[in-house]
Image 1 (cartoon, rainbow, N blue to C red):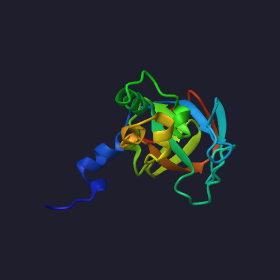
Image 2 (spheres, rainbow, N blue to C red):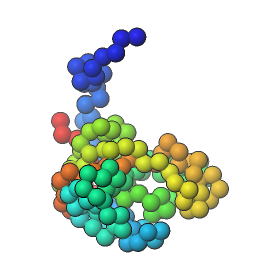
Image 3 (cartoon, helix red, strand yellow):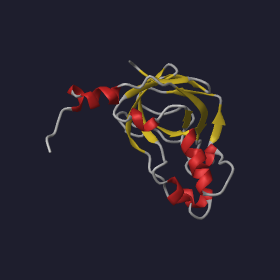
Image 4 (cartoon, helix red, strand yellow):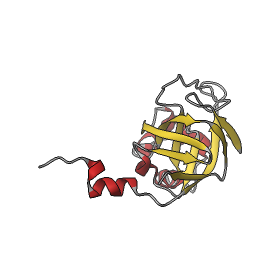
Length: 167
């Protein structure tokens, strides 16, 4: 099997082509470790650090300055757990987005409103998912945990902001 440079291939072009946009539907920060997330309408994203008010103090260059999850995956997890819905705060992610495939943003920079983020990896579920969601919560979250990202250009995030890549 021949290997190819995805940037020079039609597959590379497909990976970089994402005309769809999404919407930021929920914002949450944890004021202290293990504390419940507080839902916000607006939050400041601090360049190369974290979200203001979040206990996690991202070190410069940290790969986990903000976490994101797809609203459609929350619905899938709720379905697997035989629930009609799940409070996003129970999932311990900072941002919930809808209408765009987050995994398609892997290895890319993207905008949420005026804030520029770069995906740094997958956000795997932790053991708290079992406590927060009940029996099977951890396994229901597997493959649906979202992404981690760095804040390349800070600013203010607002519920309703558009999520997009630079084309």
